[in-house]
Image (cartoon, rainbow over all chains, first blue to last red; front, side, top):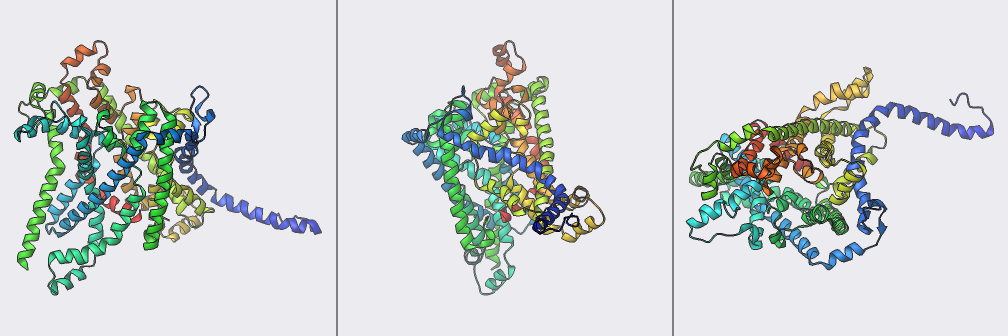
Length: 325
Length: 295
């Protein structure tokens, strides 16, 4: 095209962008198929992720179905004022952080213990058998888990009330109405379901440790315990730190299924089973209190975002390779 | 020294054996209850061995299999279709992003990556899907929201493409006159079976197990997957009776071995996973390990 461009004083200047545009056209047509490949995925992210992000503004609205949700009136921070005046705001924040904090510590310690023992097993077949069986609960949906829980905890026909407690000479317990037991029950179930998963990760890290360390320490007369304490644990420390920081970054998000399905949505025990996710769900689907629900959701998104940024910043300072960004 | 080694073996075997038993014991109570006579369950509760053996629950399911079969069909369809669709859009996006010469590559990668850091959460997502896209009570509700693709899998697959597919392979395909799509389908995908298998497996499990989308987007029982049926039956033991037979639900319900039937449906809900598990176990372990290294 630039060949045809008339060489006057003015067009000389114009021919440069014309060349650029031309180049761009060539480039564009060459990469056109790649752009097409991007389209379905990007459209999905737009719908599934980005539109809801903009939708967060409804937390600042007085939701009115008659006017249409996105056309409702702005009310500033009113929804948040209501939310933080209730004692729910404190309870759900406390529960979310305490549960997830406890989960992180316990599943990390237990998973590392199990991974170290698995690594000691010499019989390959048994090793693979143990690992598979311990990972099995990870594959089961939370609905099924709540059935398993129900089989044990049901007040009328549960295994605990009908068989185990009478055997021990204890009174029946109204499991689904007594809040004080649930921190233990939920923690136990979380560990039961997820230890296999974390174990796979830590075992992979342990297998990666150079065998020469162990051989050298054996020659020096180190005991098994000393080897674990002075070789295994320090060697997998980077993985432990990374996994923990990532989990802390997500500490504001709970496993909705665990806290909703397993306690069977029983109102009597909300005090110890309600977390931000279940609160948001109930506000939206059961109570029709969208404003409050949206405010709690935005609170979770923002604090969650800040925590991810902070934890990533720390990972990054420790080891750039392990950072998300 | 040999003695201490033996002790380590014994201790490890004992503890791991106990943990393994702990991991499967709840499933035994589930299966046992599904084979126990209804009156016995109501009297003695759920137990590990059926005191009065009975096929009544499975009999009932066989004879009234309409809604269960339907739900099973929906679960299978959603799992297959969802996984294939998911692999398609994930791999297309991941491949384009893996190309070093893609213009605005970093911008696009950031668009994917940002979704891992920040999200709108349940309320706006629900409103977008119901108010704008009207997905409520359609089969799409079980396939699209939240499950179809996630940024993490895209980045995982992109890393695979970058590290495992040499650039000269793509270059030579281009010189031989293959278009981008041709290169992608006949050269890149066949070279990427390991990562496709891993992510496909994770997606299959995710779809099979999902009950959340059905819980929030479906009110119409004819669209329920097996997980949704189970979910409803836990809260409302009459659910199956009132939806299967219609008419005189109360009378029908009294004849159903409900507590056993519940457990029987749960059994057939997990059975396919338990049966397939030994075959995919190796890939699952690998998949979890890759994910952690990347994440």
